[in-house]
Image 1: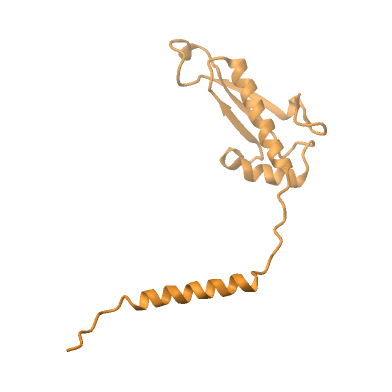
Image 2: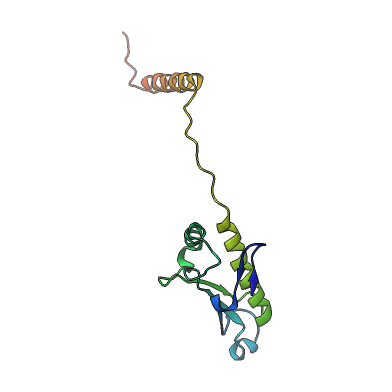
Length: 140
């Protein structure tokens, strides 16, 4: 069981962990022990998350989201299987917390009269500068 916040708790059946051999530091131990973890969270089937939260989670997950609607998080940072497992679970919880925050709706605003005038004036000045870049004619 993974607690996300006061209202949301993920059950064990929603997550599966698969341990594989990790690359990186660890000496000969790397070739013998499966310390890297691959955490698979069945997000699409999860009753704990609402529709909009799932949509935001899918957008945040990016390439980690599968066609079946699962979220896959990999971790092989440490030599310890238990520590990698905790890191992967923390990453999942953090990703879900980010997805819970609904983005603010953008309110359309109109530019002020003064800002419009300043913009037009700067465009005019820039045009005059460019007009002076032409070929110089000699008067004799």
